[in-house]
Image 1 (cartoon, rainbow, N blue to C red):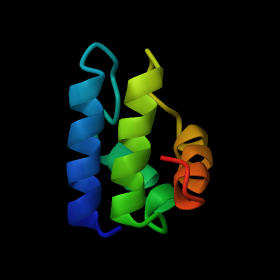
Image 2: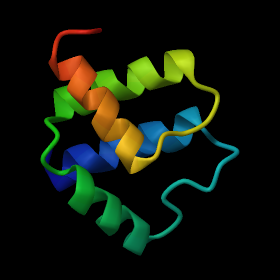
Image 3: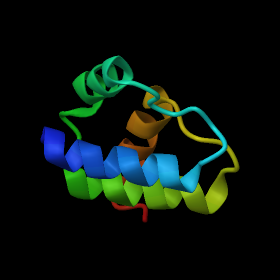
Length: 76
């Protein structure tokens, strides 16, 4: 995903988990983008929807990547 798509993803993540201090500054945004930029936006979006449906707490980078693999392999 590109930086614009990541910004949309990050906004959604913060909106789903408003009580948590997710991606609080530009450095956090840049570091998270660096670790997730190879995930296609459509996969990232589906991953976040899947996560939100089943988890009370926000995901870590590792959990996003793990769930993205599941989503990419066809598990909605």
